[in-house]
Image (tube, rainbow, N blue to C red; front, side):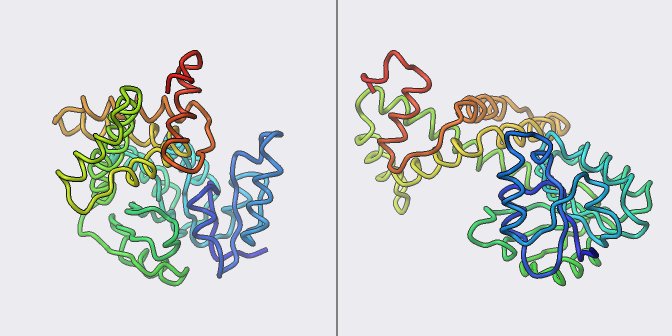
Length: 291
């Protein structure tokens, strides 16, 4: 079946971007017996044809959206380079360091493809294809036109080479993902000390307009669901900062905190107090009652 575009990786972003034009896709979870059925169901619900391997998904597709975990971005480009047709677009939407994107671009360009550095600048839900995208690289201008044809409505082209868009995303993540980690560290301690309500009140007074209880609830939810993916992204941020020579001490701490919560494998319960309880049960089982 001909497809207007292909997905490599079909997680949260893939399902958010599916719909409209016909598409094929591959996700490595379909290779894992315990995950295969659920992932195939994701493809079916989104109306995307599931493929047995990356080559089948990419073959004859004029554009591919690469939406894998950060640690798989370069491997995905390597697989894609072997399968894509000359002139086809590779939209690298992964949260990785500029150096990683430049390495991926060399693979795609050597195979005759057109590589575009894409930074996804906000959560994909509920915006879906209205999520803000930054594009850079020599094919960004025509790439923006292709994405518009696929239904993306908030695309900005940056002047600059591959790596310009990802630099913005990576450096911004120091703050965004770092605040999540700081929130977890602050409020786990506050809850354990029995002063969470007082800390919330103090922070609300210091930053009018922010409800720190709601913000903490949301941040913990995101870390429970996406902590491992965020840790992989922040490893790429560490690479970005180290390449710039500006230091990465705080971000290395973010990696550790995001990974620690992600490794717990928790389904976030409703409510901040319930999240605290779930985290304490998982992190310190013998002290669960004390939380």
